Image (cartoon, rainbow, N blue to C red):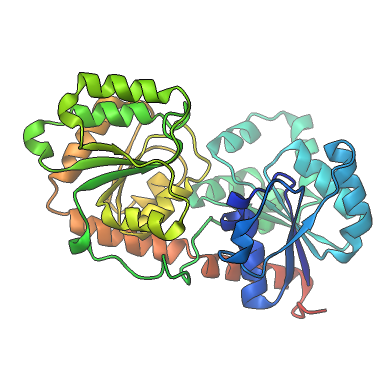
Length: 377
């Protein structure tokens, strides 16, 4: 069975996310002839190690994006059994209609990668907008929703398509040597870790720096705040000003820069006891899964799947931009006698719920329900 992930913007970094991992695992576990169709956007070193065996089909960059997509699907749609597309956008509408035009029996898998904003937009639609949405969704056979709370809301809002809805979160490949071993809390250090583009407006790194500076010094002890990720242009000045104002935090607030080696990155997760995400917006927040799977207790703004991961009173969710709540949350965690227990709960939850093998097994079963059992036809 041929499985195509159509995402023309694919870069190397996407190959270890849902863009690459679903196709990779369907091939690895169930023998699908799975590949990613994309423009060539740089080099793809992950093909040699992280997703070895995943195939790429490069789209010729000849005309406009939609013209190129038309030509690609006109040539290839009839030999593609399942087409995976992303987001409820004009691109997805065009891809779905073109694919079904050239392959009426093909299966379209729409992975929403959405937040509650989409649910709110659907609720606000008038009758004509609803009809247009239904015309599009009639071309879709599987609708993947990352978060269970949003899935439940969409089951109410999209009743005509409820049988198509499926919980397909993002995950990790726990067969990888850098991820597979569980973490001993006793080996962790007093570190609060943050991973992402440091200083980008949407990541809001500055409020974590400010919150850390407001933690009572008698409580702070030997705790450190470690940032991993590229520093945005212009943010170095913010960092310089921060250390001028808080000289006592030099050596306690550490900027390690980007870490591209995945084993080294997971070593940082393993060392930390607490992981902090201060984003203003995340559709999922894969770093929360990465950190949680390594036993980091989560404190996060209310974005992505943060509230799902800490639903067992094993972490803290705060409102976006609330520095005082972040400071209070940090102090609560670093003084908690239940931090080790929260770490174990978080690690177990992430490993049980965000394992690519389990996620893809669910998707495979759904595909079998639609297409039949012989995937090698």
